[in-house]
Image (cartoon, rainbow, N blue to C red; front, side, top):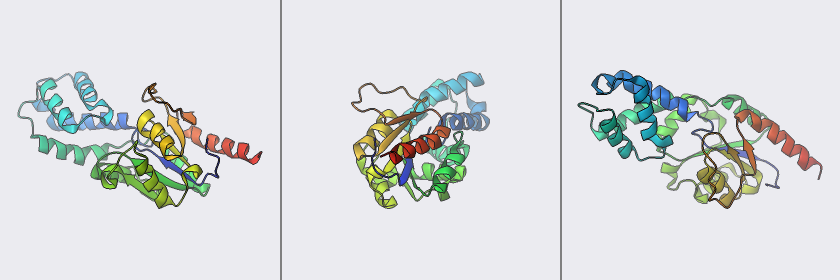
Length: 235
């Protein structure tokens, strides 16, 4: 557990501040609207299932996703891979959906005088567009996207980059994320207090670290912070 004074809280984006599962469902509706007429498969629920499975939570190469969709949807006259990639980059960010309690949580930590950072893996164009659609850019003092950073979570370097921009030491900062390896393990390696937002992914039992704290909803962060401060005040 971090023993320094808390000066900053850093967040992951997908499935932490943004509900990626709901965003993907909105994207699938757009995909059906724009291309459904050329799918050999017309059962909308089956289409949704296929796209979700092909996407694998965003951790699958987009080329492989595209090839899977063309095959499984029996996509007649499918656009080229390049055209589909451009469609994804343009349409998916517009589908961004906030996680419950996102705005209230960011407002709370700003009201406490803390510096806020965002560290996310992904393409700069897509991630930056989602941040703007969610309307949260002004909440952060630092935003680091892996493509632009040249490194990605769980590499400690990307966390260090954000901390340097915030001007805080790792022992004085929290990191909140949903991915056991990328977020919890990565933050631990960088020396931050690691908060795991459970409920999206199973814990990775191969990891030799444990989260410093566990939440299910963003609304649990404010009480956690206040409780942490009360405990520190006793010493």
